[in-house]
Length: 443
Image (tube, rainbow, N blue to C red; front, top):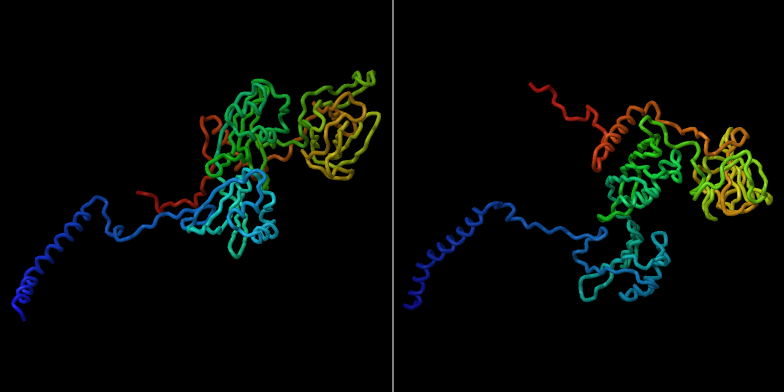
């Protein structure tokens, strides 16, 4: 072995421990510096925590390219798919075989859609998503399976509260106080048997708690009214929602049903043009004679509803008087008559059973009439009575077996309406045997 090679070998042998020591010190410094940092956790440092995946309509799109768009006016699915290189054969298959999911011929301009494509230079379409409306959407697979599904977005329901004083109409008062646009209709349904909403007065007021619905954080409508105080002509009428025998109804604080056997009026009318009279001057015949009904002036074509459940016993035309008219027998005591109709609702015929609130015809001016109106009459035991003074019997109240539970619910909501702000949802107290209780009382 040469002297030079021997010399280098000795140098390496002497230097090796120094190099190893330096590496060890460097490692310890790095380890100790991290180890002393606040919040350091050795297990976390040794674990790679993956990021949260991104989902769109239930599909993980981390490895996809997403393109969003809106259906343009006059645009068809064929042209939309063709712009993405999707063959007419695929388009035809979807149009023919997935009408049960969604009929793609009914796509509407302005509706949103998404293409989910491969994240490469080819950008091959894998899925197409179409929003049918704010809640429903259709998902189409564009691969070999060409499958389709229909889904609904999650609906979030929160309590809301609106109160107001009526100066012109209930609808205006609701909107002026930030309520849902459909709230006026819901309140009209709740109080349809107890309040004549075309007779509400300036100064009448309401305070209502109801379910408001949201999708993706945006309001989309309302659910049911939960409770309400409505002051009408100085009287406070409370409505508390309660489900009995699987049917949601509205009751006052005593458990009496707000629903009556008959509605207050058979239509949404503009004004009462003539009331019940035994000696009224007829504007066409120019004579005095009895008018045993109420004339509701309303535009031609206004829907007319049956004020209660019953059976159609007469559907006819009387040229010299009633024009097209209907008679409905509700029970052994009450019968109602609807005259001067423009026409009848679909399916209305003698012997047909109708429901309370069901549309049976439309306001007209047939027969002897000066203009479009409904001549509405009520007969009790065969004798005409004044519809405006008829006392309608109530529907079934809260059952005795349910009264204790209903009282708890009613008291909660009546108290909530006395306090400011939106109340918390009612929660049934847990039974004692379901609570976690110690085996022995504390010392």
